[in-house]
Length: 229
Image (cartoon, rainbow, N blue to C red; front, side):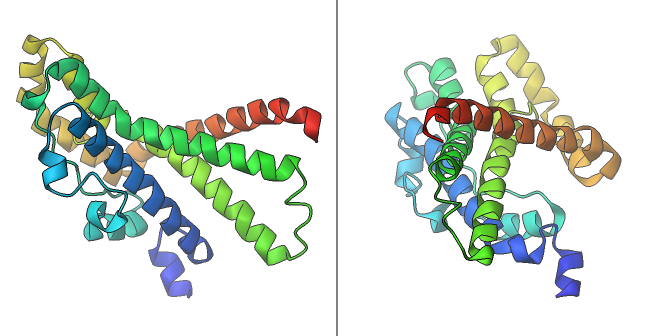
């Protein structure tokens, strides 16, 4: 057990909750890309069976293993052919932002459910300490991790959605320069992930921002349901 704890970035006792969160977060993220791409006239993802909420279709085994061992990973990217869109720039931007927004929605929904459970006395009624602790751990991981994925995917570096969003909205002259330096942008992205000093100034602040988002939404819902406490 100690050996696994040293290897995994996630504490072993939290691993089941972490995996459940990732299954939900990655599945809805990739489904959102595929759904809107198909809605806008690009059947590529649909022909590959990606317009589905079946997690097995979207998961990349190596990406998940690396996430657990190194703290970052990925799902299988949804292929999108923007030439099939009637308005490639606008529709491409919507397809790009759909994934991160799905994680934002999950984070907000998770926060809402947790606050309602607390405000309506459901958590207080749970006498089993281990069950209560499990619920608290799950909602903390689910909300903060989804808020983090929302923010992380907006980083304008390939292969993240933020880069595709900038690419979709940028003038064609700028798009050419983006493509020219794309390999270097990818290198910067990998350096950020692998070098602890760079992670401290990028990934860590994003995680703190995700925690702040959770706190702000929790405060909002607490005020909203305050009259029922």
